[in-house]
Length: 155
Image 1: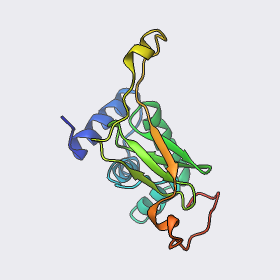
Image 2: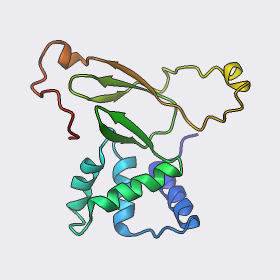
Image 3: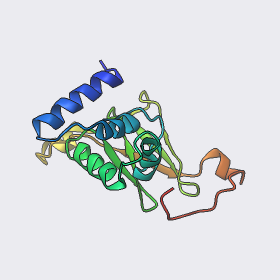
């Protein structure tokens, strides 16, 4: 059973407290932004969203918060074209990544990529999560409807 967003935030808050991190309103707003996003925001996206309510928030706080929850295994970092995007959905799912506009779309969780347990058994490697990325062209880029140009800058 999947936890509701607020239940998940409370669980993560408890884990942060247990590791000695303070739970400031700014840090909680960053967590709400990443876990409440249906997209895969960058730290800069999160900063722009949260700083509207917390003008004193620094981009460094956003990065530190994302690093901490990433180290706890509560967020997945996706590197696309030199930019880090964050995904709070830890359920196994694949990402469709456009090589032109760099959009990231989740495949439904019903579409899974099997993890061959027998192949892993001999390695003694404990998988915590896995991310599958399928790279190609999104529908808009296939027909040239996307006016954005390729960019290596995080947007």
